[in-house]
Length: 139
Image (cartoon, rainbow, N blue to C red; front, side, top):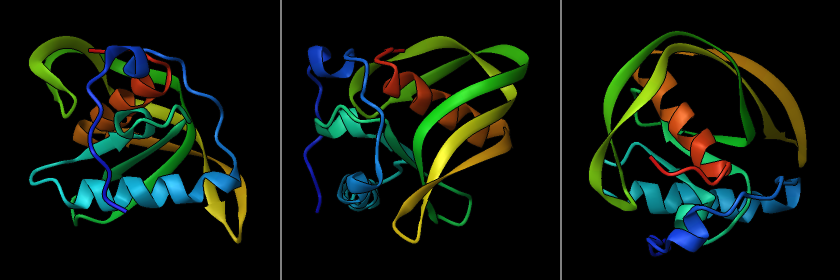
């Protein structure tokens, strides 16, 4: 279901709880909400008012990918970039890695399965932004 975006800093700065397989409905709400936003690329659960570590990003083909409990394990090529956010009005300068190794869970057959994957470029920037949201960090 499409949800309203939350701009309340108390919600956005709260450290999110670990997600479980029972948070699949939250993931679907994120997919539905992100799909309704023109030029949206990624969205975290706290941006729709749910303080769980669930995030969604769209790949180059506009296919949604859900990340449960994402965590950056390693980053290479730190650089300063300008970054916008769907729930913040201003653009911010932040440090992002050009390449990251991400640890996350993925829902498979009703259970969360641990995964590790490398991301680079724009996708690496998006997943780092989502990890920040899950940790309650605002850009």
